[in-house]
Image 1 (cartoon, rainbow, N blue to C red):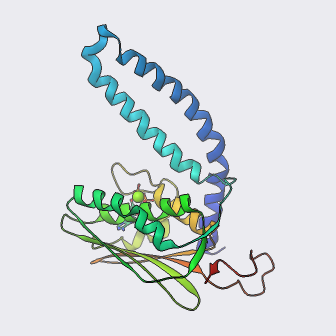
Image 2 (image 1 turned 135 degrees about the vertical axis):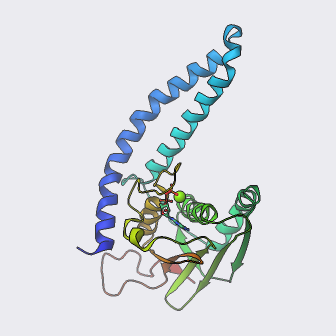
Image 3 (image 1 turned 120 degrees about the vertical axis):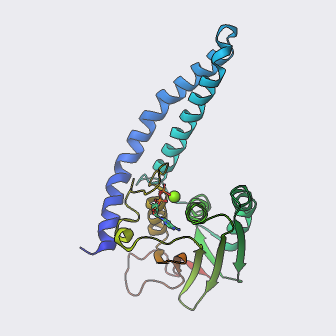
Length: 240
Ligand code: ADP
Ligand code: MG
């Protein structure tokens, strides 16, 4: 089995577990959160307000991890609609700029005119945000993150380029494995989610990394997949 297959196999196993467990954990957490909020209003424990706020924050963090995890759920229906990748990126740009400024980094977009694609907007937003976040986190203050789009006859290419220290060649094969992280506060779910979202769009992710930075490419097919009858819509994903 090649590496790409292994990666997908691993993901689908996690995906199967994700839906069930995610919901089961979230319900009791919502209850706990509710009672904490009630407690926070009680006069006699106002002096513990800081603790309660910390607990609420931690609960929210756990909740957002579950949200990410649920996106990996295998049976989540994908909602493909004809739209332009550039519009999704532009709609995210205020969020990215804020994130970059807060961390003393720069952000630039280089978007060429590209054909529409069939995309699940919610998923593609997650994909972009996860790649952008990784890029920003990899850089020292002053570093610049660039998001590019362009296309060829065969594919539309999304490219997220950072000026970080690069990825150790020894861990390249582990990228996309759920919970694999080298960060103290990482979840190791970001790239797993990206690979899963890309697979659902029949897109391919390629990582090019060196000591001066990392570039992640997401290649969206514009043409139907040869003679494979299961390859989806006869016109392929690209709609020009
Ligand atoms: P997390 O960001 O929570 O660690 P990810 O799945 O997003 O999880 O990334 C997994 C690991 O891949 C990171 O911990 C990091 O070691 C590596 N990585 C991903 N993107 C980059 C990047 N742009 N530059 C350097 N390392 C990266
Ligand atoms: Mg990440």
